[in-house]
Image 1 (spheres, rainbow, N blue to C red):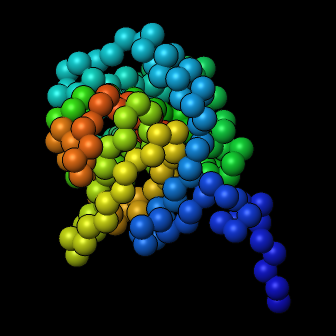
Image 2 (tube, protein in one colour):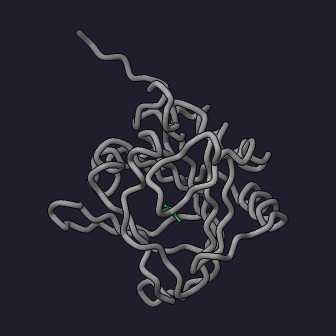
Length: 205
Ligand SMILES: O=C(O)CCC(=O)C(=O)O
């Protein structure tokens, strides 16, 4: 029986690389946003208020995320995603990079020296696909296997989306080291949009 390539197979989708870095379930989608779209998204983000109670500034949309609690419930709902986020989320959906429209977004801002510690996104809080879109300045991200400690690193290209699904989402941690340069290239200001679909405590799944 022959298998028909689907619309979103790697071979037919130039921007997409599956099992990127040899990490099963990690998908890189290059140039999700062109330069103009990146500037427009960043401008819209910078019109919104930032929270500065963490080491780096963040914005939360859809549902508030409590970094200590391992659950999301109805009381954490903030509202709809803002228009700049809906535009990006819809693009991810139309390209088949997510199977459901995300309903939670954290915008992270990194200044030189800032990073994010190695983690696996909360398993009971969020469904399988986590997507991060990069703006501003290229930083390196590491993927570390939670059992073997094996590490793979990649620069986060501007306007690209990295999609973590399956083993990349559940078995590999991701981190950005808090340093001022990557391989001799000084870091500038990076802003990322990390989209998720929440699992609401108390709801049937
Ligand atoms: O900044 C990124 O690209 C990743 C952010 C992240 O891992 C998170 O918010 O949990």
